[in-house]
Length: 484
Ligand code: SF4
Image (cartoon, rainbow, N blue to C red; front, side, top):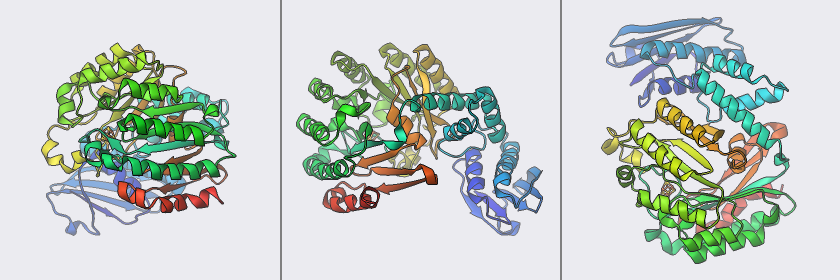
């Protein structure tokens, strides 16, 4: 428990986020006086004066760290970074730790560099990386990585008039079984398979509305995710792809991705259906190549099935296959990650997306946390450096990244790809450069207003039956953006 005492709450969000990045899993309780704090816990006192901020941290009643900084407290813009860096130093001195991402708690660090690049044209990348590391106290390696990704994204986006177009996301919330760590909208086929037909019927209604109201706009990319779209049976999968082809101008689309994430959901026939429908990119996700971990996390497939699914996709003509892996899975350390990377290396996917295990509230792993607490060591920077090394050996370059809240160690998720095989949709959704119109249960649409520097979102309900029964309401939620 951390008792927090502050005389002003102007920077409360940043203070809590940075404190929890250093002391994950702690609970912060606000107090007005030290007497309200229990001595056995951590006491953090911050005092904001007009030109000086002071901070003190106590444990067991004894002072363990203290800091002070001079700054113009009334100038919010300038003072915010000073406050964050000051708190960072205080917490670093208290814990003896440093954070690879410094004071950055946001999920899109590349947006900062992208903005600087736009302001300074042409940009000196080394100078931007230096400024980034200095401003946010990141490691040099993270600053360089972020700059490299931003440069790559800018180069790719520069080729398209993306801000005038839109992309379409279609959510299929069915999976063969539910993975232990799942925080997505996903329903196991065995129990919910009877909802496939009514679900698709509702989805087609929503898709028809989007197609009609966006008929005069160009479509950049289509992404079918989930869940696991290939968990649909052959007939339903074909019907879904046919419907999309009929409703939308697919001949102009630059990229058409379908997630075939679970190797236990694919067949030769399904791959043929995808190929015939013009799908350009698929994703087959091992998550780990260690069988004992797969068994533990409830992915009801084998390592062999992952390899077989990949080889089958290749045999069916797919030349742009992504693989997702997760670092920090229960029971896994760096040796397990190395094993997974070796096996991925043998398959040579065109892209590899690396997620640091995120413990979210909806995930079973979180609910059953007590059972697995000792097994979850979290992702480490060493693991991500190993991933980076293997990706470079495979010729894959980092091209998009994001961070999530609640990631132990507060690390990043990152996509690597061969040049020319990057997923445009991933960049567009991360950099928030164009409207992403999403259909299906749990899907969130994002509408971008660049002139006003504003983004608005509409969400569909996550519950399968509610989505089916309330489809007209889901369409109504979109109406104000589509019909002015
Ligand atoms: S495959 Fe993905 S969406 Fe499906 S249950 Fe597992 S984590 Fe969730």
